[in-house]
Amino acid sequence: MKFDYREALKKIPSKPGVYQYWDAAGELIYIGKAKNLKNRVSSYFNKDNYRINSKTRVLVSKIADITFTIVDTEIDAWLLENSLIKKHQPRYNVLLKDDKTYPWIVVKNEPFPRIYWTRRIIKDGSKYFGPYASISMMHTILDLIKEIYPLRTCNLPLNQPNIAAGKFKVCLEYQIGNCKGPCQAYQSEEDYNQSIDSIRDILNGKIGQVVRSLKSQLETASMDLNFELAHKLKRQYDLLEKYQSKSTIVNSSISDVDVFSIASDEKLAFVNYLKVMNGTVIQTQTLELKKRLDETDEDLLSIAISEFRTRFNSTSREIIVPFELELDDPALKFTVPKLGEKRKLLDLSQKNVSFFKRDKIDQYEKLNPEVRTERLLNQMMKDLRLNQLPRHIECFDNSNFQGKYPVSAIVVFKDAKPSKKDYRHFNVKTVEGPNDFATMEEAVYRRYKRMLDEETPLPQLVIIDGGKGQLSAAMKSLKLLGIEKQLTVIGIAKRLEELFYPGDQYPLYLDKKSETLRIIQQLRDEAHRFGITFHRLKRDKGTLVTELSNIPGIGKTSADKLLLHFKSVKKIREATKEEIRSVLNTKQTESLLSYFAGDKNKPGPDLI
Image (cartoon, rainbow, N blue to C red; front, side, top):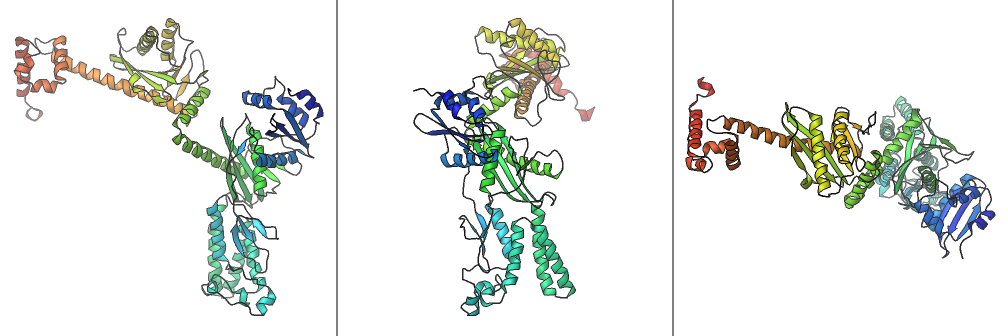
């Protein structure tokens, strides 16, 4: 029986909530949230809706039932959606990766509280700080606490009756100075709890407050000439100052905020989270999300914010984000900063997420080179406004020396890599003098005339090394061949790395760090290298031929024969009469030997 979505839509109210799509087998395939359930669910079945893409159409075709849950506010829907997705992991929802159990630092609810890390939360009144995505950061904090505040590590029941009864004796930790011996009343509970209060402030990010307190105690100890205590307090003060200098990145007036940023591509998204307390980042983590449909950055960021705030038990009222979100809750303030300290925080988060994305993609592409190729080609197609992937790219360059020995070179990239077997040189035949435009016109015509004659597939992209003049010359040849609309042609001008399109008045500028520009530059540089190498070879050969043809009785044809046979003038000079006679006639041989004999007898520079 075909699913009648019209009947289902009649039952859905115009209230905030969470909707669930089920397939014919009764499997939950998608969960979503909405400020207005009726409007949101209706949009999936609206054929004219811009949100509907191929993936979403597949999802809609599988819907056999719709259920929903009404909540009071959009924020409630947001949180409920997150918990349901984590529980059921529907096929078409964003996949949240890296869902590990992170450790916490616990201040135990007991007399003379112990402090240690754990992955289990027990509801016994103990105070838990975290979770910590960075294990090393957690241990750094614990080591700092241990070094500044000697605390007990035993699990003895240290209540006052037991201590008064003398049931315990100090252990090695007391002997080496890691504990003050509360088990034998060497340390009072009041003194112990003062340390615990300072540790709570440190774990809450209120390091400045602890530093100020230590400084005050240090000054008092110095005035009282208690140098032993002053030395101990000074060491604690220095440790906290050092830790604070590494941790504080913004003004301490930013007391309690969550910061989020996102970086995404066609398949993946990465969201970074920073927890800031009193100007100090006390928690940070980056989450990877695998797209299932064509989710927007706004959708993905909303999902990640809900996940992070649930995971880290965040109660921050202010959330810093890179763009506006369609979330309306009077208890929360979403800030999109443009300047100032909050902007610096957002930039820091953005740097973290960009680095994480680049690192993850690099790791994956090293294992799957074909993935990198596809990504590069898709990026080039997008950046250069192409209508197909540029799997076959060709680049032209000209070289000459004051109009002499003009040559053209073409290099070929296939799947964004050099295809050296397809490189070609052209000896210019129809151009006299230094005419770069006419040289380009001839090279392009000859190249694609031959490809058409041989029925070879044309490239998707042609790059001309030069500005508008060289580009116009290339287009003239393509129009003459009738293929100007079958491939995309762009020119690149060296000075400012400007990209020109035929008939476009203004150039295109790509980001200097873009991979597309880097590949174009690589093509241009490779064409220049290949062309200049051939040009120098031809120029050197021409110079040698001119030198040999100056010998009486030897013309250009004979000089070419000599160079073809002996490869260089040096080898000709060293050749025997019989070897030369195998190439030239007797009269030419005598003339050549006489010329080189006279050359040897000429005085050197030191005799002139």
